[in-house]
Image (cartoon, rainbow, N blue to C red; front, side):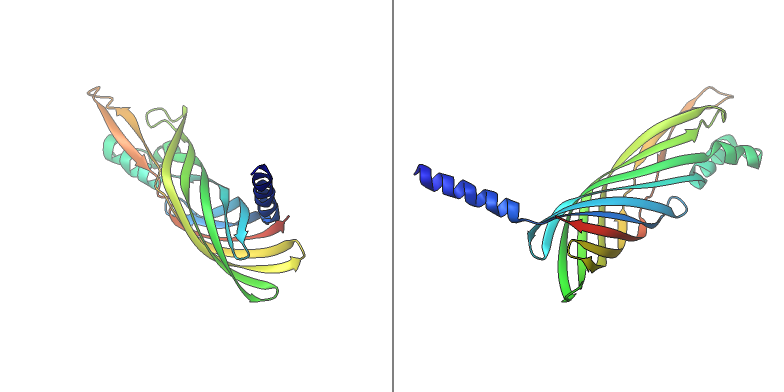
Length: 213
């Protein structure tokens, strides 16, 4: 019995050890609905459960400084029309988007050195938001917002070495983090709760290098 258990344990270790792993570093362009497009940097780790199927996790970083048009409209609606330059100054936003996702990927070899693939991911997205206070533009504020996030994509991997691939991918990302804030009417002293949401849904085009071990 003990010998059987030992053999099974060694068998499991051998299976796990035989699994391939990979690390993919990507860079490219992402255009979410909430902001202008910009540079995106990503990382994806994979474990292959068979030759053409893997599971793993991914993280990416997108950063943008921009004038938040939605916040600007809310400001004008609540406080009325004021100096345009001042309103834009108060609506300037510095945003960092960091999705953390679990993923599965299926590969379809079409040539000895080329594979097509489809991938799906789901997880959570964190937004780090630095913005000017609505009622005091010289005062900086910081907020975090979270939301469920998912992503689907397709791409191509081109073999450039025994343990490396060149990868190109197009993907669609979906999330809508939000947070609430309070403003005070300077004339009546009444407070109002406003919700600010960031539609981070959009398309990304990425390229990168994948390494196997």
